[in-house]
Image (cartoon, rainbow, N blue to C red; front, side, top):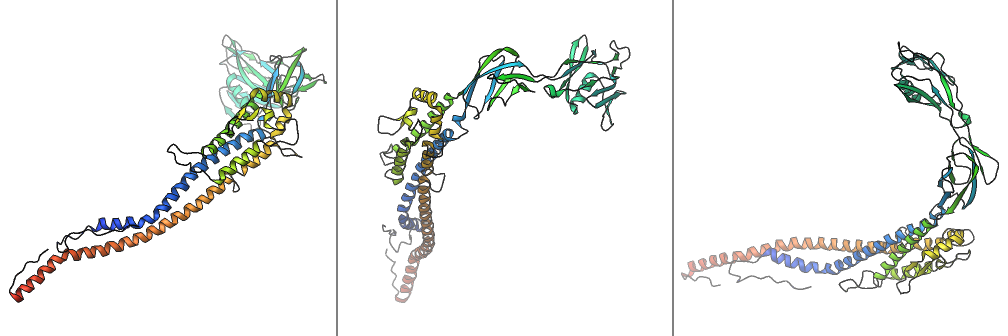
Length: 476
């Protein structure tokens, strides 16, 4: 700590000194004790930034690994193909699907019962009754009557309004108005239940075109246009199976098929395959995420652009991360045809930076010959610890997402030190603030005294002159 002097001219000049500047200089001298604390705080904060960045990249690596270790993840993906997509199309293959080939023969498609009424002028009104199943719709006086409540529902009962009324209710059919030309339309009724179980009776009863002088006036009749039936198909020569829908979800586990055309004489080949491209993409993401973490650690072993050591240079946590990552990435599994990353085309680089490289040709070959073993290499299995389970455990013990992670522990230790340093500085600033106020008061009083000296000397001189009769001006 240096010394601070008070600079003023002759004590008898009456000019005193600059109190504010003097106090500021003294305070700055007192605050010098905080400099080591501030430097240490800056160092800790730089470490925090680097540690947090590494923790984020470790988290990204964990996410990339999880897509391979998750039983519902990338390895569970399947692809499907059909030799004739005009007859059978595959719309989905879930994780429950098993790779393999199947032969499909489509005997007939599922269809719903449908009916069409006789043509009437589109603008004509109707009257009478229409029975759908056991429900009767009564139409009279230009209004529809609810068959359950008996309430009259005012509306202009054209074909369009009748169709809207039917669709708003629960009649088991969907109503549509179809134009047939020359200003005429037909009311079609299609069962909302596909297949043979969707049978519904339609009775037009006394329903008629009630518009006077209409060219179509008279009874409206309905005729069945299509009989409802179930789809019929066979798989791999097994007995014929049926479905009320042409969307079949339970024939091949995990596979959804769409039956598009009846072709009793054609055998359609359906292939369910593993999604190698998705696995290769996930592997590439994993390797890239791992190399990012390795790059972070390598960076901390060197200097910054200004040739000062990186914040974590020499930090024991960096050596711990490097050692444990190296052990985990070279882990050899005790069971299965795939026991190491190198068999999947993932190998360490030829330099000393510990990064990985991916050979997709080697990976694709391994997936084609040992897909299940490749999946078991990453996913947990009873009886032995998989590579994926071992690496997952390692990453949990290194990152900042849990209380046991090395990064988390380092950040917490830094946080404790930063709290202590900030507390020390707060306390020191409080002491300095008190001393600053006291100094200001005392120096103001001293300065006032200095400024009063000439006046006091003048008073003494005047008194001396009065006593002696000798007048002597005070000298500076």
